[in-house]
Image (cartoon, rainbow, N blue to C red; front, side, top):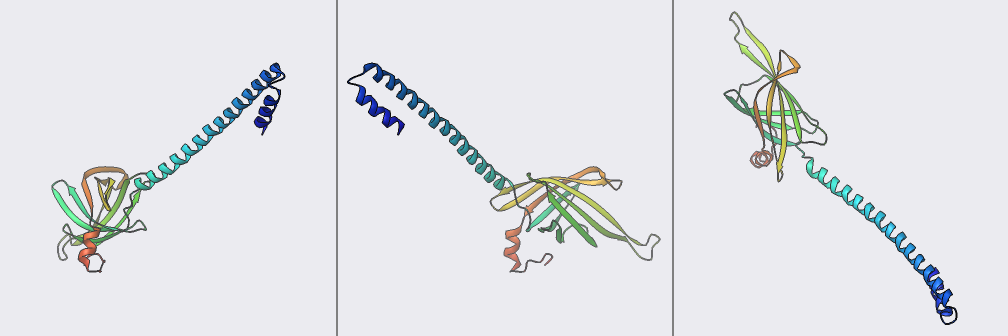
Length: 207
């Protein structure tokens, strides 16, 4: 509105007062430049706001894609210690506990496990405690139980819907979890699709 009023004044005075005409033209030019600067200033702020919004959205999408979900899945745990290899069927439950299935390794009498993923990463950690019985009744030593504890530390990867975990196996040295010794390697292969396909709807492990 200010610009239109000034333009009208210029038209009105252009034929009578040349100096005033020049002065008004100068004022109008200054106002227009100032208006463009303000608009440009808001444009910069707006662009920054949009860029910030886009960055936030992209960052959220990246975090969503980065965070691999490994729970509620069946896995084949392959353990490689020295020259000994064995495979055990596992199920990682949503409450961060582990359910155990069949194994082709030593048979335990009891097995408990827990797992976790460090927030914001794909760093996977699982601790498994297994109790075994050995010896025989009627002998000098008799039968007795012993327990092993293994810590599995690795990194998760994902191809499509399948999750894979690869890493190293540690054993508590002298029973202290603060002094762990690396004793082998492990792989966890997502077997969910195969398990559900072959279970005939019965998803219980060990069947």
